Image (cartoon, rainbow, N blue to C red; front, side):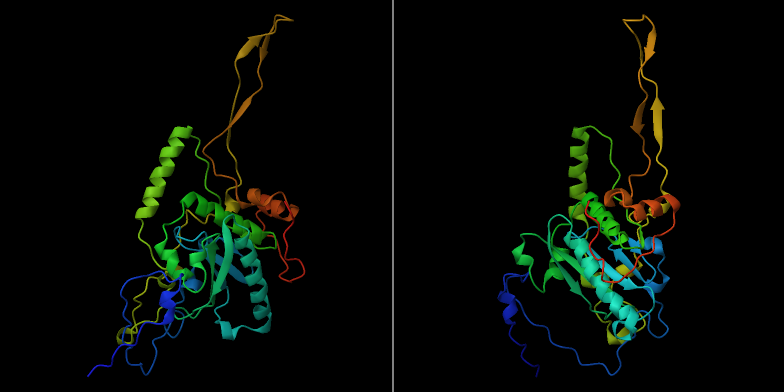
Length: 326
């Protein structure tokens, strides 16, 4: 005789609970004697250790920050990872102290974005043995998204536009670079088109984004433990391995700005009767858009790094955690 499923908990009546209608609690499976290894444990490869720097939006000497491979429903979802293959409880004192500094710094960077009210910081770690902390931005004014269900709402809400998503990534990367490290995310390129063409392009992009398949934050990082019946396979989709080179391009290699210089039409000077040539006109071409350093301002350290290709060195101490006002 099967046990009677328990009644649904009280949180199903909270305004932040994303679902409604008839609900039923699942029966718990029997506990397994040995849990399957996570990624990076035993003989399983670690996707974070194998990922190159250009898969991230910002990289430093001991930390890296990456994003999803496409826009989601929240203004920003980012992951902070240590370079060293360590889990949270394995961090030495130096990295443990820096984790606090980086957590505060990244929270401030995300909260500086337009339309962000709060930043939720989460750590699950059921899918990967490599330390990774989740940062989820709650949209301002969306009181129904407050609380513990924000990660579920992320896959329910329609994705934000890709242009806004790329701009947000570049702003966060530029903010972090104020304290050191190297920003790799770039803002979207400006499309030099007529206003009517821009309107049609924006509508098409919004329709494509709405049709994209939604994947939850927890599924994205394989945070759900694997079934005990098949410990050698990973049934969750891990966004840890998804790297879009188009979204995280190293700005250090894109410093050239191409221009087309033309000579304007000639005109006759009424005073002298001689032909005069108008000033040259410089028009932007289809070259790369300004990098994060342009969005961050003309701070000397950041500008020097962009010009020389040498990543600036930053002190992770807590004494200077407020970037220079722009």
